[in-house]
Length: 102
Image (cartoon, rainbow, N blue to C red; front, side, top):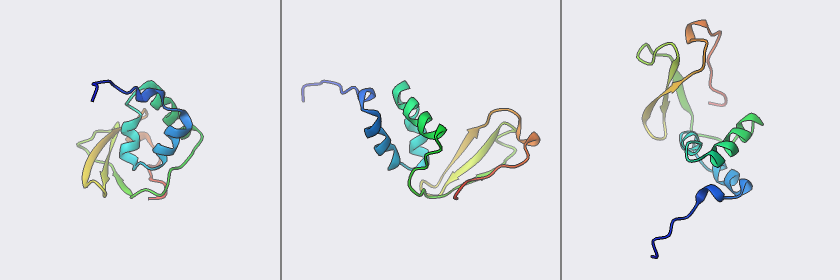
């Protein structure tokens, strides 16, 4: 090994989209935090309502521990719980919360 570092932010958008299509929901969300280029590809796909392959369902729920500005999410695949912050208005002012195709 020569100790060189690969610049993964330079991957072409179409290749990155193909990789994103293979990720589970939690990994896809994490990928958006890698760099601004990856976040842009993720945001573009989300804004176009592009759905990746069928995902293992996650359970969304309200919990007092998460507060009014967050929901709990349980990943059946990872057997792990997450807290997802939500934009305003707080949950108490929302009409509904749901999970598409899950």
